[in-house]
Image (cartoon, rainbow, N blue to C red; front, side, top):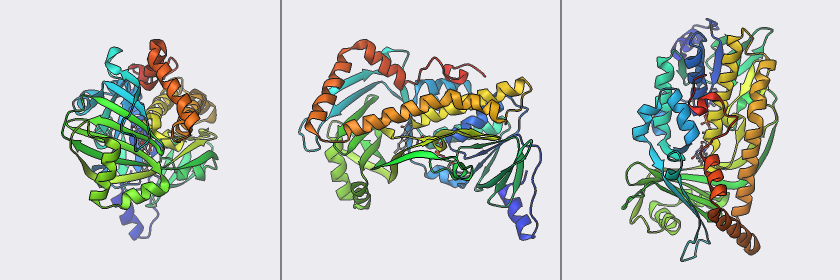
Length: 423
Ligand SMILES: Cc1cc2nc3c(=O)[nH]c(=O)nc-3n(C[C@H](O)[C@H](O)[C@H](O)COP(=O)(O)OP(=O)(O)OC[C@H]3O[C@@H](n4cnc5c(N)ncnc54)[C@H](O)[C@@H]3O)c2cc1C
């Protein structure tokens, strides 16, 4: 197949490149979800040729300073895919979590709920830098024969009887049996396919920033419910934490525009002094928050995965974990159909994937929506009711265990990779 350099050369020569050499699956989007889908398929069915295109240049990866909470079930999947051994030393286990509910000016933040992850089958989640995760997925995918092309975006596609013709922005063309759209929450391919969404914006942004602090965090995560939205402190390796800080859109923009001194003061008001002196490290970034649920996940020769299918509020840190489940379910659907000699790109086969994933993602979307509405406000009766609810959960060990199991991503209908098994 033609890399970007070759297609550019051909374009300059005035020819339209046609790079149709035997490709079975084209994946648009080389974030964690696109890459894990590719790796899962290539691991279970090495004879299938998988190509991943990502619009961003490879250099963009080193500029990604974000980190994500990886649930225990997703850790099992990364183990089955052969990359957890490499990632484990870089990952910070979350051993404990506390939940508070207060106003910004309150002197004390009462703790209403505590989770101790180490009392089950190990930590319910690990924090991992995005670039470490994407780097490991990329290296393993290349080792297993996946073709990775950066700096070129899928710009169009056209379905035929037995395949799909995929056009790249560079002018290159690929013929495949299936196009997987893993192109993020504002998926242009979902639009091109004419798939409608249920969408509502929250008038909130998630500010993401890393802080260095004087004292050790001991693997403790904190979720502080403040009137503007949750302020999450998530432990990283060393004396560092990743913050996901929700604010109303106008306030978030004001915070982003502040000089370092003023920003540090606002940060300290929310972070507190438990971990000693703190200092923001690296750039602050903000992401508009909303709920986006695609009405369909599949069409003939076309499937949506990850945020392209469902963008949810980060209040429960579950977006990426839903994406891993999609990747595992789609890979299992494709590979099992292929083993039976079926056409894995046909809508009938792909509908199995849609049925498998839709309920779980809609349920999580609705749950995060309700939690966000319940906690991002300062109404006294709502506050009293939610604090009573939190304290009740804290006193009921079985309910608490159920919550931990949910946060860990364990689910009896999960695809095989999530249970640590091969497809
Ligand atoms: C503030 C915030 C904090 C979060 N924290 C967590 C957390 O702690 N845990 C968790 O589980 N989730 C978290 N999430 C959610 C998580 O980040 C997303 O669910 C996840 O990034 C989705 O991955 P994805 O691969 O589907 O999409 P993306 O990560 O958005 O990747 C899409 C990729 O597609 C590429 N692309 C776009 N268009 C094209 C095209 N036409 N052709 C080719 N390539 C294309 C882009 O360059 C990009 O690399 C958080 C989200 C936010 C906003």
